[in-house]
Amino acid sequence: MTPNRYSTIGDELFAAGRFDEALSAYRQALAASPRDAQARMGLDAILERARTAQPNAQLRTLLLEAYADEGANWDAVGWGAANQLVVGWPADNDLQRLAADPLLHAFLRKSLNRDADLERKLLALRKAVAAAEPGPQVGELIASLAEQAWLNEYVWPDDPAIVDEPAATMFRPPAVARAEVVEEQSLKVSIPEIAPITDAVSLSVQAMYETNPYPRWTHLARRPTVDVRAALMRDFPHATPVEFGNGPLEVLMPGAGTGQHPLTVASSYANAHVTGVDLSRASLAYGKRMAARYGVDNIEFLRGDILDLPKLGRTFDHAECVGVLHHMADPKAGLQAISDMLRPGAFLRLGLYGESARALVVKARRDIEMARLPSTLDGLREFRRKVMSGEWRRLRPLTAWEDFWSASLLRDLCFHVQEHRFTISRLRTFLEGSGLRFLGFEFNVGASQSAAANAGPLELYRARFPTERTMSDLARWEQLEREKSNLFPGYAFVCQKA
Ligand SMILES: C[S@@+](CC[C@H](N)C(=O)[O-])C[C@H]1O[C@@H](n2cnc3c(N)ncnc32)[C@H](O)[C@@H]1O
Image (tube, rainbow, N blue to C red):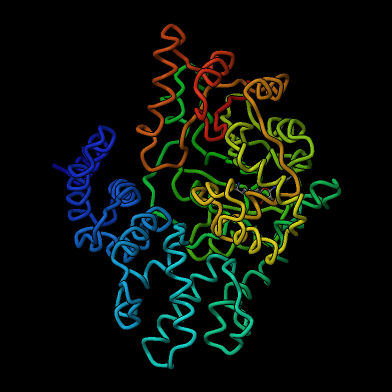
């Protein structure tokens, strides 16, 4: 049996919820072929979900192996690692024991913490370490906690009494700028511009992302190569088949951010060339730095407004735009600008905020406004204090959101200068007249096991409307959403240019 066969079996077992057996299959695949991306992704998806009430030696070993593999998804495995750290945490906060824990160091340096229990323990550890006598073990703990502070962009509470380095680097950026910061400064000026930004909302959105590029990511996880058009034709067989010839698939990514999504696309879509466009030079410089680090050269970054895309004078075979259009003054104008860039038959993958999914964020935004919390690091820290201490109890569930845990993520989540939210009926008006045909929704896009994640809502639709095979009728989806709340975590969907 080839290693890839084991990975496929792993995926089948995973989709059936037989996680122990899936884990064995993925491990066999990786033992035979350590760079097997399918098995790595499957195993990481299991480690992401792995929770135990007591420390588990096998899980610890698997987590350490994942952290030793540059191609693993450290964001995903961080969830399982946080659980192991919490359940194995020494009751007496024993510094020696903690300093000797390789999982703690790997986690702090490679995964952003997203666990409230663990944050409390890490804050106590930081306090103890700051007060401890210097020594090699304390030095290592300081270095790891400083990396975590860099990852969360210093969103944990400050302690102005700690002024001397190295301890101060657990609270504030180091006095000597990090190499990444220096490199990004010089890269910023090398990014070509489509046209100067003039739209008032675009200018204020740009200012926000110049200060807080989103998202701050640390590594490019290995992914299996995918023929994206063939995969979309399989998922949406009612789409119109169109061949674009043998040249590279020209992919447009408006709102490229810091390049995480564009680099994932450039490194995993077969024979693709990616053009990432964004308002923020700081974000694009981050993406350029990461492209150089990972040797991804089939990508270019351009600075500009989506509204000015037509000035590029080029057309594209495929586009992906996630988490962007709802931040424009007129999302429909943004959609039209993108649609105008697409060749007939091109697919467009979109991700937009949903009104009901963001009900809690709407409350948070209201409370932030009432309390006049500024959109600064101090404002973000004060917001977190109110939420985590229970002072703003009704917002406590926000800590279950992935984007609660660093400055740029939290600013984007709750302090955004401009956000629209969609309903399905608004989606219909949005798409009308755009030259785009709605093909269907995707659930949990980018998740390692999309088939399993897709199953719930799609099965519901199939059961409810068995004769509508394309599952692309927005009126029916609207009806289903009325019958079942929380169906959509947001609207992720695919269209095709007519
Ligand atoms: C929430 S981030 C999403 C980044 C990326 N798409 C992702 O999913 O990681 C939104 C990005 O859209 C960009 N953006 C917002 N409005 C834009 C516009 N009118 N033109 C170009 N980029 C825009 C912002 O600068 C920001 O980098």
